[in-house]
Length: 363
Image 1 (cartoon, rainbow, N blue to C red):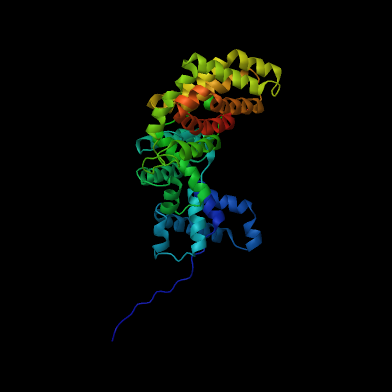
Image 2: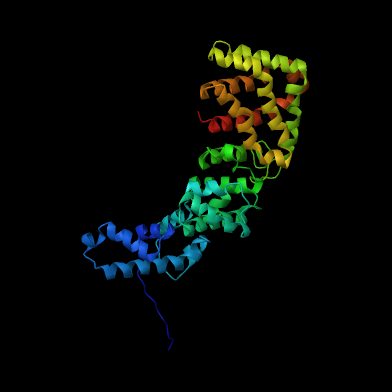
């Protein structure tokens, strides 16, 4: 006779309110107090002891689940707890959700165990509990280490390996991209910018300036900048270095803007065109160097955005100038005839730069 052991269990109930308290770093006692204040005893008829026991049981369940949440595909194959697929998806999404102000503090920094100690300071500055900050940092580090060397779409790799929805995967793609390229985000003059500002720019740069960009001929990788493209950007120096090209460019831009923007702004463009153009071109030509790439956002704010704000340009003025500045290149005969490749490089560069500047330009 064959002996068979059978184990039968019900689906595990997940109280997502308590899960939220656990994610936020509350202790069991603190979570009980929050639940008491919500009036749960009156609505359920439970006693304080039952509430304490229920909260503790939930916390034990979450601690048991955490190792599977750190590697989401394992959550579906584990046999310790029976959890419906829809509930699993919600658990994963909530576990990997984050506070933008916490990620803003660590954006662009090296994600290593050695730098994890800095999370204590992040907790103090953001007034978010240390346990929650550590979870968010560890999630970023875990995702970075998993996908940094993978080929293919960064967003897709994150979605596949961590089962995250596309919107959240895009945010983590920005974090990975910034950490890999060490973009400076902590300088005082950048403090007015939010995580969403940087994430918006990261998405543009990934899709236009990396090896994985649609018009890149290199291997499909979204983490590394396209070095061939960055090298080609150095050729844009002709826009400020060749007197004939510079004068033609300036004349076309001013002609396109005359009567379409306020007179003070137009006068400022006429008198400061060289500085404005030199900034845009110098940023482009410097991206091939690690230091200049790292300082990309610092340079944009310091050399272009701050001077325009000081001159009281509106965001509409900035947009009008950038559109005219980009379009005028197509009308310069010398470039069309002798350096046609520059037009493609120029469009690839300006399409992203223009949108980044407008996103960073807070009036």
